[in-house]
Length: 343
Image (spheres, rainbow, N blue to C red):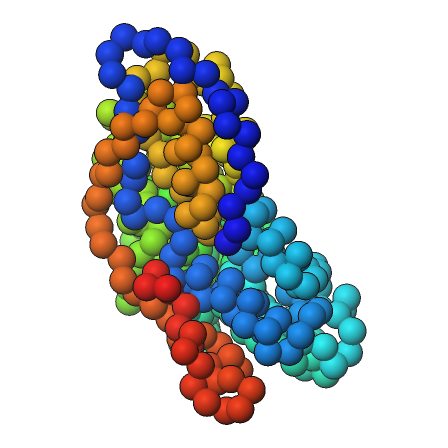
């Protein structure tokens, strides 16, 4: 992702009691599924030429979407906006079978950039529905990932938005229930929802593994570590990025005096820094590192040039690109056949 043109000196270096510093969370930023999806659009543009259409935002980040638009990607809400015969990429958040069928009916060349961890949840939903279980899907109504998962078994899935929804649930058979979750939720809130569900439905079954993705968990763990030490936590991420929004909430829950989410460093306000010695910095799983570096540059202008890393995990996971993009035009395996943190 390209860097933005930075306005140096926008933030002033004002005195505070004690030394100023930044605690930089790690892991942060791009996860393997996001990187895979972004590389998929980039490679599709090279392979097939512009325009390449993308249903919904490929990932929930303003800078990524704008950059891909300048490269020739066209973002649409639904596949009926895509000209017949064109190439369309499904976003990292996944789609329902109905969307896949509609794309096929229009003769579209679909490239599925769904995160493999989301695909895992889809497969679990299909399997549980075939076992005649009803599925309580913990997630946010209207989020693309939830819509895609619910579309796998619409007659068997009930969405649970929060712990407060539990008391009002009506189910077909309380002894034939299993829960799944959106991958980008707050770990703590999800477990609280599961606890409330189990109080009401003691025979509720668990999925074979935790659905909340490794990257979401790792970023929340890192924020939990830095929050008690921070007068201010700044989360880089877009407003429609569920995991970015959760990081701000987690920072406040775990002791940060203040926390703000920004898309760009230019959104940081001078008054946020009043009396602040220690700033925690992190970013959501759909955020390119250039945006964090621009924030660090601005904070250095304000006297926060001392940056201390807080590392709570190492990530080296990579995912293969969608099958349509693993070879070059001549049929040879492409050197960039992987999308992930190693790139």
